[in-house]
Image (cartoon, rainbow, N blue to C red):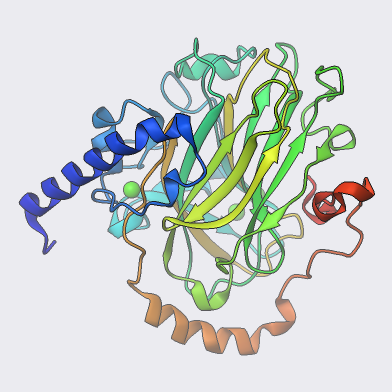
Length: 362
Ligand SMILES: [Ca+2]
Ligand SMILES: [Ca+2]
Ligand SMILES: [Ca+2]
């Protein structure tokens, strides 16, 4: 580390000052708050700063322990039979992170599930993360790195949702953050509330009952081989609408830059029984991985306020690009297909946003 502790301390102070200034803006106008690029503190020890961030609901930098189920932790983990694991050196800046190992053709390669806030499902409430609060707006940070030579777009990355009933996993809405099949991530908001503001879904992922509010892809080709080997700090922001107002938001940022935003969303109509109460991080590749390959996660943070990202990662970029160029030439036939043209339009008036991605449906 060239910077030294004094510089690091200064960086942290800067971050805190930025957060303090930004916080009142959350309530006034969330549209541009997280666009301000502030340099977050040392990306290898993110959760060390948690005490300075009361707005953080959950933080895991994978430094202290392997992901586990329990109070303050996850409510469910799929470790892919040990293949999805915490490991030294695979995290940001050479820290600990989570390693995903996809074998060729593999679909499910593990995931992490966090519940927080007021949640009707006892199984999820094992985490006890601020269980008496309703969160109508959250920011979720996840650092993602695809190994050098990466090929393809796994459909899933994460989702933020509202669970509504004690006896099953039916949902009021889902803010999907997943791949567009063309190398980018996208936002794909879905509602499961009827005109009388009652939950329509009858079970988990009740796709037949979802109303797709319209997806929008980002601009950074995070899954391109040419961009493999570098870290991306992905921040996913979701805000439920106020009752009677179409003012919900789903947007995401990479390294502090806005990628895609949907606003004016009537996410849950006037439903108020529960608010955002779970985040799932998923290694799920609907079409199966095109080859044996790995990706890595670090710094999963769920917050009630905006989250800063570290300076964009340029380390290893040249190496990754050089390697990727040759790989792209030799494996072009392995590139997964683009989304099919069978996306289902609904009403003509909202045709611009009224399609969803059946190729990614689970
Ligand atoms: Ca780490
Ligand atoms: Ca595996
Ligand atoms: Ca598996």
